[in-house]
Image 1: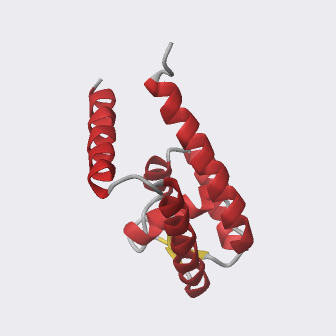
Image 2: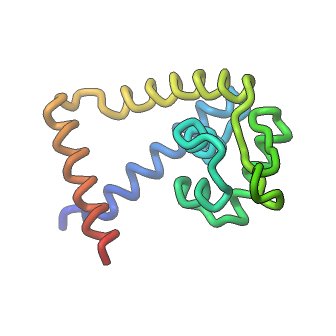
Image 3: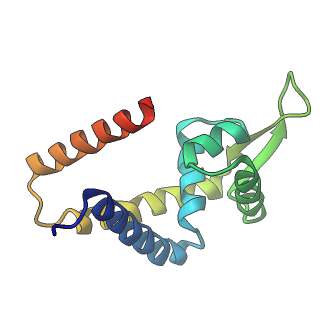
Amino acid sequence: MAERLGYLIKRTQHAFRRAMDDELRHLNLTSAQYGALSALEMKPLASNASLARACFVTPQTMIELIKSLEGAGFVARQPHPEHGRFLQTHLTESGRAHLVAAHQVMESIETKMLSGVAAADQEMVAKVLRRCCENLEES
């Protein structure tokens, strides 16, 4: 019997995550922290709940991630100007510098992963995976 597509997706995700953790360790980052920094780069001053959704983690996990990133000096938090009890998180200069380096690491991992895969096939895989996500998210 051929491998199930879902199994291949999970196997690829696991190998990708392992490569991320191995390489990001040199920058004192985990893959989860990289995800949070990337989400903040795309949506500065996002709420913890919004960041949690973007990173596929619970709000409680995001709080711990933000605390660890704040302790490392990669992010800073400040009270929301209108809703004082809400904290807004933003990247620090150190966080931005680490994120630039982490993006380079990610690019090399993606290049290795896609080695030998034609550009047209890469586009097709991306298109098919996007559609698979849409199909599952509709329900």
